[in-house]
Length: 123
Image 1: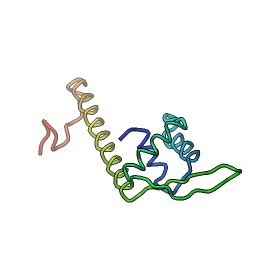
Image 2 (image 1 turned 135 degrees about the vertical axis):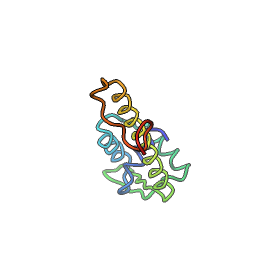
Image 3 (image 1 turned 45 degrees about the horizontal axis):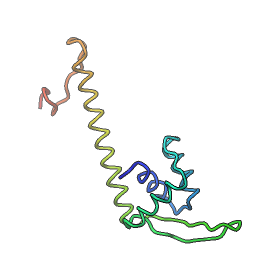
């Protein structure tokens, strides 16, 4: 799943939103790191719709402009949940590896003990 798709699904996790609302929510959720252009957003929405992860919730006219609201499907909720779990597991593995590297680089007398269950620890 692309980063853009992940944040679009996340933006829709709590309620249906229209395109501009999705753009703002993605930027907020990503702390400004993901800024989608309109063309990119609609490409992502088209792919997520084709994959059955989102559906058109409703259309309304506001100030003479058509707004399309999208919402997650059950498959979309499952896909978002699975991706969040995958990302959390990857982040956990990275943090463990960083901690192991720091222990290995520390002078022998300053190394913290290796937790039980890890290589070199007492089980």
